[in-house]
Length: 186
Image (cartoon, rainbow, N blue to C red):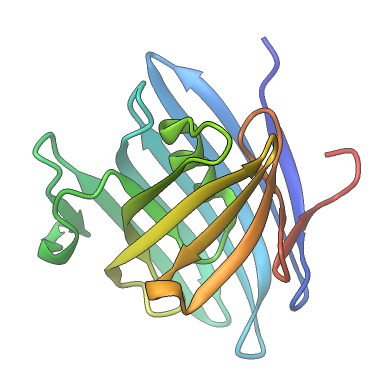
């Protein structure tokens, strides 16, 4: 079995991200590493997101460093869709199905795969957004609209942020307008 992988480069500043997707024991494991600069400081973040067979997030973790600051966070979601950050409840995101790690395009794959939109269809998504560098979990309302065989229009923050997404057959974003692009051959 081939394991889907991708390597991105940032378009707005120096940085790269690589990710892979593995199905293990009826759960999807999305893992990766992002390296970039934030506020003039180098940053390295390893991440892991675990989803059930229907692409609903079960947990997420981020570990690494930013400048001289160590980073380690755990986000969990129980069967009733109650979320926590390092065991502290996050009531504002109760009911969300997806996690969105704010520093990587990798987690756009989750709603794209879960929704399975047909051409011309759109869907509103409520995501538990892990901000960076704040490392808080906040509600982020998003809209995905399938505009082509491998393209989506993405909108969040009530339309204040929009982007065009191109995706691979595995669901990985290959181009995130103005922010990320897959390296050739990845």
